[in-house]
Image (cartoon, rainbow, N blue to C red):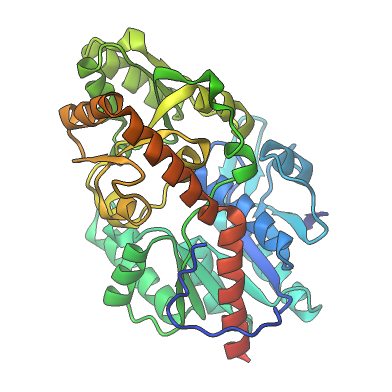
Length: 410
């Protein structure tokens, strides 16, 4: 029933590692289909691929989607097949008719359990690594007898919880996972500090920021840059601040804005907002594009914006992929001045401004054009810094941390 195909080191926290790496067999459950429009898909496949390149044997267990094979996924993300990386597709969706498809996470988890039991008995996996809270909770309660590592990206109980009952369920689940996992990886220091202050964490903790494909984004040709073109890439959630850059365009009459990302409904909402602010003719909305399709517009743009708002996930917990892509691609970066952003950027690498203020954002963008030499210096420093945030650097951080977990779990 299984479908199988074939540096910033947050552990500056005082861990000691052996000189000889431990060959680890990692199972990475990902209880979603690959739909090719989510940042977490990019982060997951690149993390697994980089871990496999660094000597780990990795099995990525995703939800099965008709027509999607290992080659489909790897080709889309411009990744080469590796003998140490396999994709396992587990059932999650029941197709009642051609048009009626129902998702059952319990179905995926049951197949996951059966697979882990068999693979563990056959010596095919040494540990489980996941970024999904429900999967971590489920695996911990199965007593598989192998380390469970959870990679945290946010605190779900701090999100937009619509009832006290849901808040309690989320908090209890987080409390259980954080107090029982054998290792915890966070994507930012602020998130790490928050979790250590609010949950009874007993295992080791490491920080591993997100990464960037340096081969793809670091080689973009800057000769075609349009100095009046501003770009935003990624999702259009409210806290991402896309409304702010759209409104800021009314103070930037010579500039144009390209927004790459978002669903059809979200794009329509942003187009309506642009019309209301009388900037529609200077704003292009393209929706989600592939990694390969992103390179041309990113190469052409001069300024990359991160106009995040001051919300919990944005202020302290996020590690945006677009940030590292802007850095590697040699864009002038204009970003909201938030603690999560300052973990990576400062005034030597970017122009920072107060969040959620269209006029402040416009003024920061204006300052780019008044400070050509300063803008070029920031581009150079940010591009050099991006070298430390490759997926390979991230994999080295995680590998060393997992080695520590494995050695201490015996």
